Image (cartoon, rainbow, N blue to C red; front, side):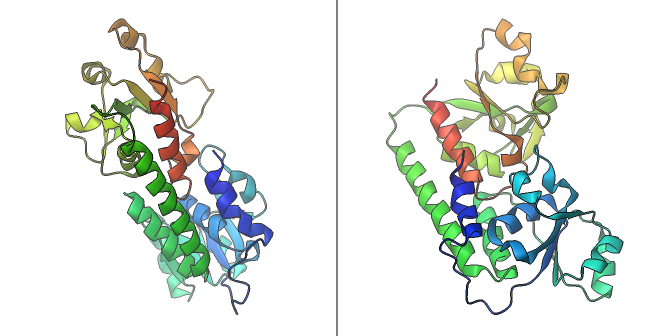
Length: 280
């Protein structure tokens, strides 16, 4: 789906630029996959000094094509210091050794948390806008996302009454999510019932094949990281035991680069899940 890409990257072409009068825009290096994505969504290209090594990865990076225009670096001080950035953007699992060394050398470092909800994702967008001196741009992105979510809420409310269809995220080796996650919230916003909660899973967990058959969801959501490769762990949704039990769940495939990090594209996931309801 192209909503987030078209609505965010339009600024890169100078159309409707909202920061033309900004006196100084910080030069940034991102050393985390998720901060890579928000930097590319909000920054002017000339602000981006370098991105993380994963930024070019098609399976993980939503803006992997755009990332090819920029230098890649590993999260080690020896690679970052010669670039002399105004700001280094990191994640919660970036090496403390690297972060402490950069701090000692006087290089500003900011780490963004992993979003566990759509509201926190929107908060991360706003914070990134401030860090990049692109507050107006971030505000416009957040407003557009909220409008889209309001539209989805109205469409779900207009659906025929009755119980919500039952669904489970069923990724590699039975990995699943509960409602206290971004994907879990996407499921609820699209009007589905997440059966993982029936097993007490609120955040992240695993559903065994027997548990899945017992729960009997009407649909399964999968986001294989290495799509098209032979991996038994990534083929659980095709397991013959599911059909042998009399189940024939709808398989909803969401690209992994839309689920690994939360961002403006997350609303596209909600939209896709809503559209999938019509296929039951």
